[in-house]
Image (cartoon, rainbow, N blue to C red; front, side, top):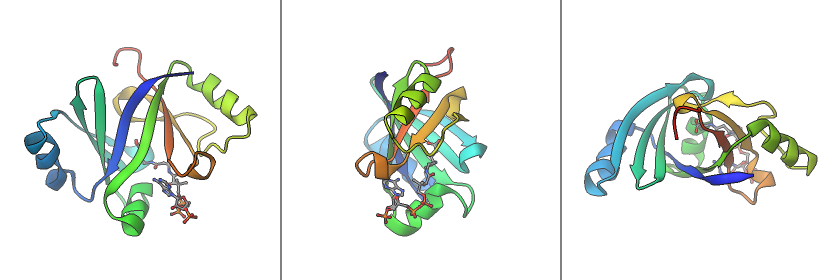
Length: 137
Ligand code: CMX
């Protein structure tokens, strides 16, 4: 069902402040920022070989990332797996009793369709399913 680890999401208060460490100190390739209105976040993507890191900055106090930062401070927020068919993955997990936050896919960054599994159903790790847009990887 899963094709690869698509990205690791890291919550930050400010992309501008966090970026120099990832881009300049660690030397990751920075590919720009994007606002994701459906998730109330601004994201920055950085790549390391085939792997990606997503920095997440809340755009509203109602953002799930704002709540996470308030409770935990900055740090690893979620793990995202690539799937070929997100509806099929959601249907399979739901049938197995997995608690989905999103029973219907939402629009994520880069035109991907995404759905989250509740951390209470995935061993405390907020888990994202990510069906990449057909023109991106
Ligand atoms: N990782 C692991 N556990 C988490 C978590 C996270 N990122 N965020 C919350 N939790 C845990 C909390 O610690 C809490 O556990 P306890 O009850 O044991 O204390 C429980 O989940 C409930 O958390 P909460 O703080 O009360 O927060 P909410 O219930 O309001 O929301 C969640 C939690 C996961 C349902 C919500 O954050 C959500 O819907 N997330 C999915 C969407 C999202 O995170 N979007 C941002 C990224 C978007 C993108 O990548 O494009």
